Length: 136
Image (tube, rainbow, N blue to C red; front, side, top):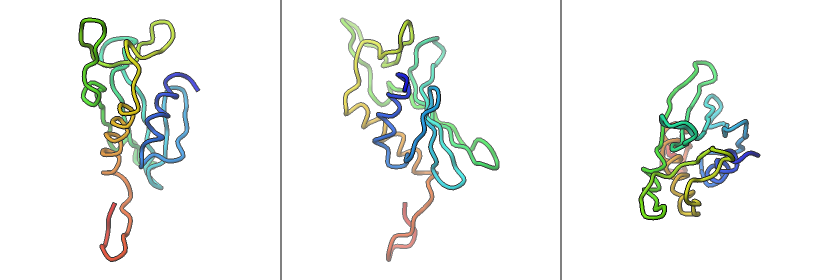
């Protein structure tokens, strides 16, 4: 596994709606339902080698892309302190890939997984709960 897939695995392993994930290149690919496949990857936002967002894309096997969601790391983690200034969290690939100026904590990975789950839940197959009709 490369650095990107190791970091994605730390998020995917905490997600309720991502099971049996496969890691290909810099992406995490998973099956959300029989017809829906998902892909999670880090992406840049206009600055080369500066991966500051998590992108989730959902595909229907027959119809193509269903939806795409970009989650800015700063929106979930907040700004981080580097020396005397504040910066947006990101993975930097100048040389070898690494988190720039900080290392995410368990709480950071949990927060990213929760945001991903909140999004994926809207596309997951409803399950029947006993006595309550349909539920998630």
